[in-house]
Image (cartoon, rainbow, N blue to C red; front, side, top):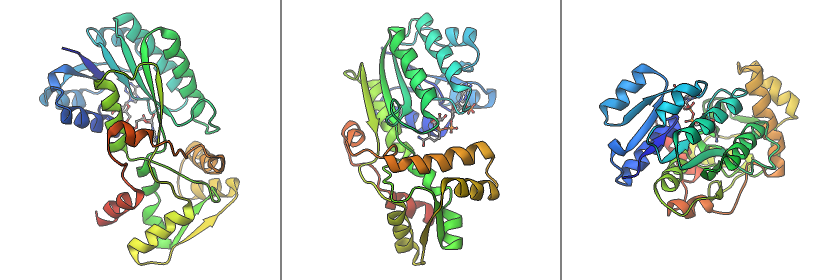
Length: 287
Ligand SMILES: NC(=O)c1ccc[n+]([C@@H]2O[C@H](COP(=O)([O-])OP(=O)(O)OC[C@H]3O[C@@H](n4cnc5c(N)ncnc54)[C@H](OP(=O)(O)O)[C@@H]3O)[C@@H](O)[C@H]2O)c1
């Protein structure tokens, strides 16, 4: 019986990966989860998962946490700036523990992307490739859910602010990306592959506000701003400076296509069309 391990299993993507593995009839007893908080550990244990305690920063604990694991999904960490050394710990520990295969949630077009998050992902991909382990890179595009963060303000103000001009975005829901991760983790034939994962459909911000207008019956306009002004607007709205800088820059560089992909690799992997942004917006507006 193959033994799997999912890191980040307490997070939003990780929980959906666990659900997707269940839908593929993988017994919870065959699934280990790496957890760093006791409360979360107790909850997952009560659901039948094989809970392994560990933090990406603690190599000694990671080696014992990975004992007996064949196939591991490394969900990238959330501590931007700390992630490369953390991920390298995971890779080194996996190798030391005898893990055979790692799937890693990277970033769309990571190698060439000008998005500020790319270097940590490239460094991790390089370490995994150099480790000698079998691997698959799941280069996830932006989550569709990211676009919901500003929705309340858009509906209130009738305006959506950004710095992307007429850039095309092809985000995918966490659920679709989680399904792809579960497919790759639980089936053969993905070794050595790099998957660029994005939604089937794309939109510009003008299209996006058009969809919100259609669904809400309100008039909504897109207000395009220079990157620096958009960053100031985000900090003015209460976002921490580093996050505002990252998001405004991602908008600006997305004009070069870093958040767009039309390969339909994701829908091919999961065997059904990806969830359109209209459905994501409809669900959010109904809740
Ligand atoms: N594609 C995108 O649009 C996008 C957007 C945001 C983030 N991401 C990346 O995708 C990842 C998954 O997304 P998500 O929405 O599921 O994020 P999330 O809800 O913040 O979950 C992050 C998961 O990583 C775990 N984690 C973080 N640092 C860790 C550490 N040092 N040691 C062990 N576990 C650690 C967290 O554990 P705890 O529950 O203990 O905190 C949590 O389970 C993120 O971590 C980030 O790298 C991608």
